[in-house]
Image (cartoon, rainbow, N blue to C red; front, side):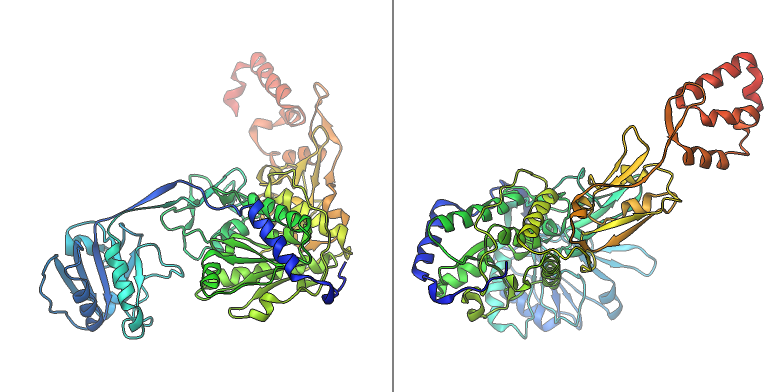
Length: 571
């Protein structure tokens, strides 16, 4: 399965022709979502930084159609006359610089100061008599102010180190003047709460999307009982790491759906082979990076097939493995400059997961790699290994986890699985559970809280079954178990048992002493009787009600009341 390629037999011209045939036949899916997020900006600009930088920026912006300029300086006051637009100034004391907070987006930035008495001062209200600023131009040095922790600033928040970035000043100032009016963008993602593994019954489980969003656009919203995931469409910038990190498919692109990328990868590789192409390498690259290469006249060899993304986070290890399972020799992820730290960390973690799975299934980890910026030789190199297969993988499931399991099953067929459990990076959505049979009462709280089909009841038989392939290690079952009978076992099991449902615990049914209907387990009845032994409602002969089904229990209560109407007053 890891056969080396005979390089002398590769015809690049034939590969180039095959790649062009793919591009003509099948288009890469693009975001076709109607623009349904609208920003309204009137041009009220807030400037932050030293007096020198702020005053110079303000002078450059005066008379260019903005509604107002508000200057917040960190050292001394600014003496400037208002010309075409109103101008307000304020000097932040050293204490106020630590209390300053800015939140929001284009057309709706709130700048606040927390007072010593706990009150919050709205600076837009205090200085402009309006609720918000429309645009923020931060010309402070990085170590001076830390008003926001964004790795990716929201639309309308522009950063410029005034002294260090002289060459960029004109472009940034021009961008400020252009941010006046109405602006539309796609609502990139949608959330299916029915699939979400974030929360259940007041317990918090999966937080993977929250951990990887560099734009801080995802929040956990606390409801009356449990939390839910929400994506702020005004902050979301379509990075895609959330949809790749989500193990259940609860977050996905609106249009095109994430699964369309998988289908297109499979179709591309099939078309490439049919056109005579050999040793295909899938390279995931951003639209911006690809456009820059083309503008620079870069032409890659015919065996390199580019999959263009809005951002690299839009394809995770499931997409990369899909390419291998459909006959790609290698997958290469082209990094670019200016990547947010959380996106870089996410890709490293995804690489670690992909390599862990390949190792467990008996494949060479060299099949998936990150390409550093400027690594032309690595980008263009012929793969060292032949494709694992030439047969396309047809997906008959829309569910993300089911599709991933199909990919893993294909890779297991093509490799030599170890048959053991392999350690995976922390947070990976692979693993099993251990159930303490002595403690489990088969209350099935775990089943009702499990967001996937991993845990199921036994139907007419008191039992708990588990399918590891569907387990995303969210931990909700472990938290929901009232008897602390469940323990998570992280790690990928490279054995057929992973795809086989097995019984974790089962008991004989307890039959109702009145009608004979099985309604619980013996251990459940014994536990309840022990806990309610001193309850007056079940005193004396009434304790037998706990051995009755729900219907017979009610009937027995009414019979007792009919014989002794005052019985209920004694409880």
